[in-house]
Amino acid sequence: MTAHANPLLRLLQERYGERWSIRRTEHLWLATVRTSDVDHAPTLVEPDVEEFVRQLENPPTGAGRSLLSAGWFRAQTRKLGDGCYRVDGPPMT
Image 1 (cartoon, one colour):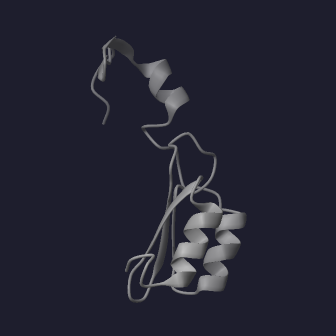
Image 2 (image 1 turned 180 degrees about the vertical axis):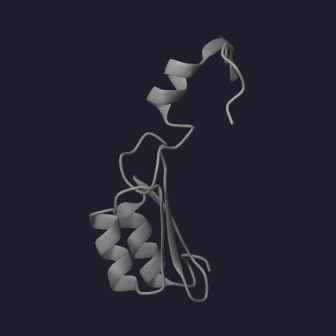
């Protein structure tokens, strides 16, 4: 669903769009953080718009740690070039 077709979607994108990428399906509101280094849930999925807005304002705690978390990633890798990294340890399982 596009922001043009849904004025509420457009308003939420204008208000929260710097921090969240917000979209809408027929039955769900979805938001994904624009940066991977966050200490809360990186994705929100809600059928109820009021609960969705509450979570945009105060995101729930994330489950686990993102393997792409900037601090963790930097500590585990060596940068070889633009977009190219090397992990010197054994493979992760």
